[in-house]
Length: 241
Length: 241
Image (tube, one colour):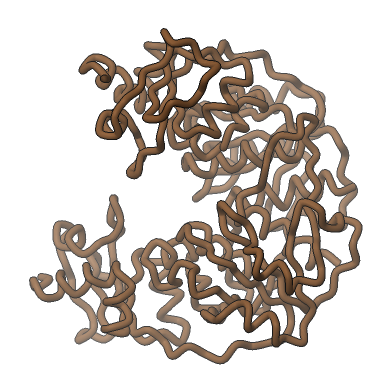
């Protein structure tokens, strides 16, 4: 059984202000929950329709009916389990190696996919502008597929951060250098811009390295790549050596 | 004004069986509609809340109120316009150059993003297994951002197609050759597998070239890349030369 108060609390966690107020967020699905449990995330409570998660203490686990799970789930088609976790304390930005910085990414799916790419390509630090969608948004948590446990995510004043860093800063623009023909370092900050407007003018001023992903289509009409697929291509180029 | 019959017809086009029955599909938003109009797609009727699309004949255009648009839109937040188009006759598969083949891609967003990538990287032919989501699904049309007008999409029996082709066939697998260290041709078929299960066993047997995208994360836990981001990395590698 899930009590009315629990339903109310968990539903409220779909909104950022309540996640901050309660310092809680939730994840759905065995794979994501398992990954968070194995990492440093502290479980608040687990709701599951199965007799699974044997390592979780009895006191922290409630066996629920599918209809109850539906009441607390953020998914159109609920999974078999949902877990509420304590929000970890934000760690200091690790300013070394390859860093991805996001300038106002609004789509939860894009943020989740980019975090998953960071994890794949060994990027340990993701820096987000304060306008970027919240990493603990349920749709983001879902799209990360557990990568949220392995990449450090920080929300900062991006212009200030870029102005003060000692690392080389990269951004992609229509008039940038061909990324396939440019020698790329193993350390640096790669800035990815907003879905509709790209990198903001204010930030553009402080970017010293302008890159570009060439188009190959005969009819030169495709205006842009989706920000997540562009990030995939750029990280692949930085890492391929 | 939109009549009750028009609302009923357009709503029905969200389902594949009615798109096939009426040989119609719809697109939303100025950018996508403009791209389709400029290509070979034949307009059935345009519904817009603005005095735009001046080139469209008076008889093919209805000025509607926002509340009417909401009734016919497939979007949670409707755009300013929706256009119904005639479904073009499926063209013969163009079996040359670089071809992307999809083995049961189910997510409309993924199919749309992959079509956009084909357009960017000059891939003129996309081949889909019959289990792949329909290209005229409104969510796919939306995600293509107009690329649907420039890439030929065909639905085929994928195993038969692969067995009969003269082109080299490529697929990505965990145990494949490092894609960054393999010489890749400008002609060939690249097979991308289903979101959850990858390339089906049946197809795997007929793939002679096994590639792999190396991971760089220290903790080797990220199990897979999203199929659209994997396609981005692979097409980038094939094209970069």
